[in-house]
Length: 561
Image 1 (cartoon, rainbow, N blue to C red):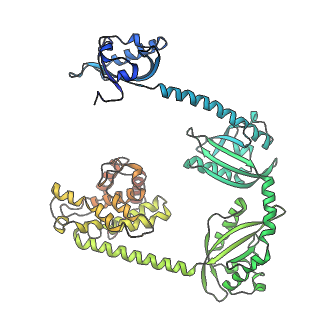
Image 2 (tube, rainbow, N blue to C red; image 1 turned 45 degrees about the vertical axis):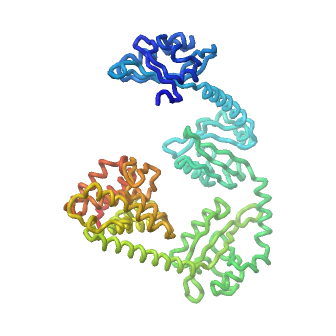
Image 3 (tube, rainbow, N blue to C red; image 1 turned 45 degrees about the horizontal axis):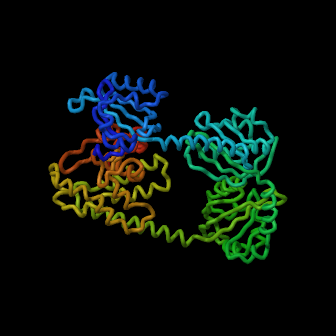
């Protein structure tokens, strides 16, 4: 292994004489091992690096086991100097070695690359100062409660009519007080927290000094600084709004649309609706135009509408469709899906236009499908309990605990998927002989190896079933551990789904706390102590903290206890 290593491996005496050097030295410095054995190291070091290397050598010799790293220029046989990365380790106390092990490799190309990077940084500075787009660099303060200016390019100075000399170090909310109402401040905070870049579309900004439409691209540097590259698109935006004003009121298209189209002001008063909307709700046009949107909404829906209007006034359009329940004139309830945008007059927003479609049948179909999935999951869980009666209820208890942990962690849309997977996480045990599952004594290694096959067996059973969540993968990973000590694949950390990490934690807590064929129940206190001891090693730390909170602060109890 030494002889074929791409690194040069050598042994030095305490006096600094070469005792051994691998053949790789010829590729690095051009010498054969015979040229170097018995030679001191000093003649092969660049004069400017000699003092530094002498200090490093003394540090290595100071104590057995010491390891020191350096970057140094070494003399090539041809007379040139090569940059090398050197690692020395004092192994004088090791009977089989009794030498200083020195590994070194050629890093000349890397040094050239570093020079290129330095030149690239210079070019970046030139680009920063001379680019046509505005650029601002911020640093978060008070844990992201505000941001102070670190830099501001010439284009930004010109656009914002401000001198950057008095800008650096000042809070953004002080310099641009309208940024919070504009919505960009929330984007800065979000990018700072998540590290994910965001495009914030053209949005209107106004304060006592300036106004206009700005389109922003915000991202986070490895240093933690936030960069916003933006353009003043006021001219284009006003032209675009003028075109929209005529297009959006194009009456023939409005009336003939098969989709329900409606227009209302910011207070919710209907301004116009097309025939499809009238047919859906059962009103005639005269009635509809005298009504407020609150009149056709089911109970509890109005706050959602006004929250949507507030968002629209910031962004100008709605990216994701919203769902509402409306009331027909005859009293029937309908589920609708809507998407809205602002209407403009003279460049200013004055109303909301929405497009809606009836999704009542679709939602009912989804509900029926969910019930069918639930029934299927219950049937699968029952199969496992039939095969393993001693742990009857285990899956239900794990599912309820996993659901509670996920809820405490605020995972929202992922909660039902976690509960579903946890309810059948041991489905693979149907492939394990029942006499092993119910054996009242500790299993042999061979028997336990059969038990360890059940996550893969469960995955094979579930992989072709189209659940709305990655259920098969959660079942496969429910015995994996954060430190890689789990099975079947020894996954580590983020390689394991967060959902799987939560189920794994709930599975262990329930198993320790409950009765098993080969031992009595050990109790919840011991179970919680176990996950505390392995927090961050075997178990996800956030999941552990959430589990402790629901037991200690919210007095959680297992189902049936």
